[in-house]
Length: 419
Image (cartoon, rainbow, N blue to C red; front, side, top):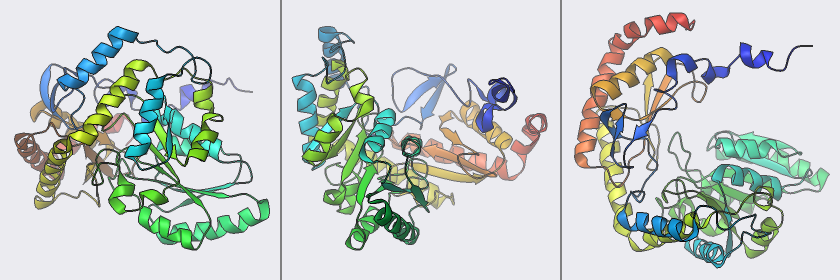
């Protein structure tokens, strides 16, 4: 028998094996200064394209005042305890009511964190006789929630209605045998590619198959739809989404999340959602802060308008210069390049050190080997000058990637890692 830790020491995982080369710079980097379009990285000014503060709320004086006043009045602890025991307040109820109205649902329930909350919602909704059918590209929190399911689950090809229907046929046959139901899961916006989920096509399949639809709309909430109510509103199918999930960590620039659905479903979740029943209530500073942020989503449409002005300028500029940005239909702006992980390291270092551009880098195993994905997140705080500088920088790094400069610079790292 081997020691439990032998495997961990011998195999640090596809990302962990790069820790000595990457940590502190490519992963776990430290951005400093007020959250904005320009921050500091290792003492240098950089244009930041990796902050999910879509509407630019994080550092607005009126937001910071509400946060500060709430912290002064309540501290960081109040209310103490889980919601069911001693952590319930009128403000929690008010926020839930306003969120439900904003996304056109009967009721909603607050979640302490999006990741663990979304996992727990899936766990609570399905029993062992039920079947889950989910998009293969769903976020890690969805994947982990599905892993908790003790029954059958099937994946369908990303945004492929034909693949979904084939799996619904399998699920329907199985559910007939088990006596269970079917839960379909997709996303409003897929965070890496920026594509909206095919919600309209999924909803159309309800005419033929019996299932309930859960949508994780972390990146769509506040950015898509006429009022900002998300991808369902954008595609005209919000009423057909049975369970709607969104986080405060993106457009709301805060902490927490919520689930919204028919009143009866939310009532059930309140009494069966383990991640909330056995965890501390969302502190008042975040609840009052979320109320203010939600109010600004409703009353400051110019923030979303500015966001999309920047999104369109950046994405159109990249396409005009011949960059591959995939099929994004959201603010998320991926730029696909061909290259190895060592080349990606050299490229990103050049971007940060010589061009003053900070964006997220995504490589294998998140995307296929041989691809580099640079993900840019435009916000309402970016300027057209930021976009111009970034477009020029990307043209420069593409030329160096294509002429082999980064391959030569990264040769030693590649050899050391056996690449």
